[in-house]
Amino acid sequence: MFTPRKLIAALLALTFVLVVGCTTKKNDTPTPDTPTTPSTPAATDELPRKETLYKGGFQWGPPANFNPIGQNSAWPTQAEMILYEPLFAYNIVKGAGDPIIGESFKWNADNTMTIKLRKEPKWSDGKPLTADDVVWTFEYSKKESINHTPFWTYVEKMEKVNDQEIKITLNPKNPNKGLVERDIMFVRIMPKHIWQPLADAGKKLSQELNMNPVGSGPYKLKSQNDQKIIVERDDNYWGKGVFGTVGPKYIVHPILKSNDAFNLALQNAEIDWSQTFAPQIWKMWEDQKQPVITWFDKAPYHMPASIPMAIINLNKPGLKDPLVRKAIAYSLDTAKVAEIAFTKYSIPAKAGLLIPEGLPESPMFDQKDVDEFGWKYDPAKAVQILEGQLKAKKGADGIYVLPDGTRLGPWKLTAPFGWTDWNSALEILSQSAKAVGIDLKTDFPEQPVWNDARNTGNFDIIMDSPGGGYSPAHPWERFRAVMDSRNVPKIGEVAYWNYNRFTNAAVPGLLDKIAATADDKEKAAAFKELNKIFMQNVPAIPLMYRPWEFYEANEKFWTGFPTAKNPTAPPQHNHAGRAIYFKLKAK
Image (tube, rainbow, N blue to C red; front, side, top):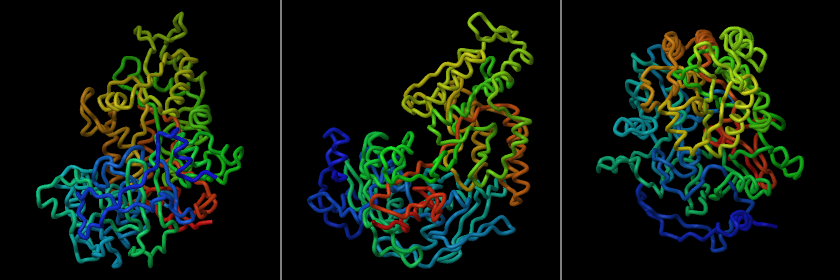
């Protein structure tokens, strides 16, 4: 039987060879910038299979750093919450945070939040983790622009009450409870006693390598090189009395070069748990008879969380007309996109910015609103809009021309080269639009070119997934990313949301109302109104519903992975998905 080492070597045709790392003396006083490599396994480079979980889909190149606030931090620093921990871990199934370092939080009538911390947390070097570490972690982001610096846009102050209690006061000019909740569930807490001396010495902390990390999680870094990263269970983990003991003693993340390599390893049980796009994954159990599982055992297999969509440039002649945009929307066969481009991993996308199934936002979805203000696949309706409402005439080439002489295309449909599901989705949109007389042509540049075109507004129609991963602030973050024109620069300058510069006077007030209110009915009403505005104006066309992370496992060596039928934990690798490690048992 192939061992993990042998299969991985075969996958890369002998160009990828697992090597033995060098053993180094443990540093008694680790600092984040100590570029040491912890001791590796025995000389055979093999770990006991019954104690080792193999993980895939997060690390694609040699580890550059293990810095929780660094760029390109290696697995599992930011990809999971098993090395550094947050106060709470967002649970996508519950739509709430699971307590980790924090025990509870509550909003008070005066727009303040009180957070109570557990008494047990300690760092892996044995020192206690207290409110000082938490406040310092957030306060540091005032000194350097890092991933949670925007926290201070909507927070006036964060203060220690005592070692186990913290108080947050909202910014009265920009109160946003959802984004505060997001950050207390996403920001990894850092040990002040290790990082503050570096800051005091003038170091820019985001640039520290942190190759000998001291975290508070159930695992510690054991070894790393350009072939793999290994973490080892911390048997002194503070949370054993709270969460139990993690099943795998070791977790190994091989560094492979492609989805195909990881998927083949998963199929052959050389990877136990993966986060890669595996087309037609059901064939692994139907044809190969492998004990592979996904969250759902039938389509769509994965839990939806984001909406990849075709974002339309509202400044282009022809495309600036919402009726032209709606005709394009009516032309699109979203069922075909779901089945072919995304291999049944999505239900057919519907009009609007609300995901209709499987998420806390789903009860707000209203099919009656979609029927009245939105669209569905109906080529005849697209033609009726073009001919009956726009008075367009079809040219000899089969493409419509507006009365002012504007030809409906050619317009480019842009997505990064090699993003196969996105590329296929745009091919289907191109074919669908051409069938009703609109000329859309696919354009697949390299990812940096796509990124620059998106940010500067230099596109006709571009595919993106606005709003990012799911959080307590969703769907607010998605609506804001697509519709909020505030602080968005003009076309040609770099924007970070609202890439087509959509503007509607009612949007800012509705977004602010949702951010400020605690009344769920008021929030739902405002979201429905925003969704109507989106559907009436069609600044973008949803193409599919994509999972936050792909969740697939092979149970040949490990059991206990949750599913929709046995939801002992959410289908997440990151955030509240860390609970899965405490459920796993070796076969």
